[in-house]
Length: 283
Image (tube, rainbow, N blue to C red):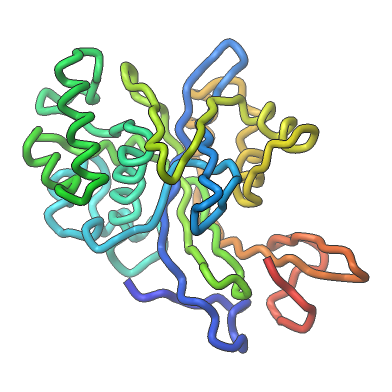
């Protein structure tokens, strides 16, 4: 998977190589409306330390393994690549999102051999998959191994492509990230790994934004923007129905422009946003 450059990156000196990544917005219903899962990154984390973000991480070579295509319950790689506007390996983003979700919070978006969503209601099944997760995090097995052993199909059709964000060039670590939206399976509980994530919270998107404005609740900028986009919905069903209609999702590269000792973050469509690096920018 070869990184590409946007127009904003043209003319810059040796921008950091983009790392492909996937992020999952997991939703569940509550009396307060839909809730989304946010993870607090460890202060030692290479990226986003101390901030709340959605579960997710880098796409790696295992995620692009061709054998996975027969284990997906949704798109083919051709269909997935067309949705993401990439030449090939689009399914790797869905794969990475499912893998990272299982690694980080223990939620597995997959169907068992009977065609039902994987459930951990049975204590024996929960124990077995907890061990799978531990082995996966120790790099002793891959998710492909788990799928073969348990005869699973990954529930990619439940994961709706939501947005596409890119880290600006001045940062030394940069990500090209696809965001997906999905309902949390019944009878699965989110449990953090206590490694990259040190705490978790299920929270209504509007309430998360209020805490960010009024309390010491640090949220990463793209996470804030994605929360704004979903905060008006009153149920998970309505939210996902809306996301399912999204087409031609744009690639968003924020610019943080410094003017008269003030810093303002701009995104495409904002007044003053441009791709030429004539103003001092950083992120």
